[in-house]
Image 1 (cartoon, rainbow, N blue to C red):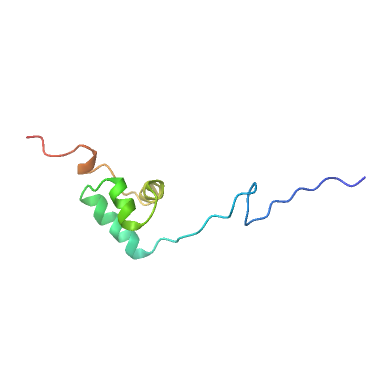
Image 2 (cartoon, rainbow, N blue to C red; image 1 turned 60 degrees about the vertical axis):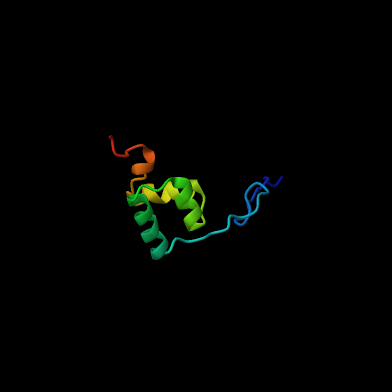
Amino acid sequence: MRPLVFSVCRSSRHGLPARRRNPWTADALRRLRELAAIGAPVSDIALALGRSESAIRNKAGLHGISLMGVAAGCKNNQ
């Protein structure tokens, strides 16, 4: 009796379509740093770069970019 062998196609997992890869360019990473430095909200950064908020948070975390600027409530305390 032959054992059952299950294989998963690399382009599809569990019947889901393959992810579309959109590599980060040096320019996009520079823009992420700039927008984070001025305290832009994650939603605005995502819109400007054409990526999801999750992608922005992940890339910022990988590169040590703080997203806790002005938009996170650190405005002038006057």
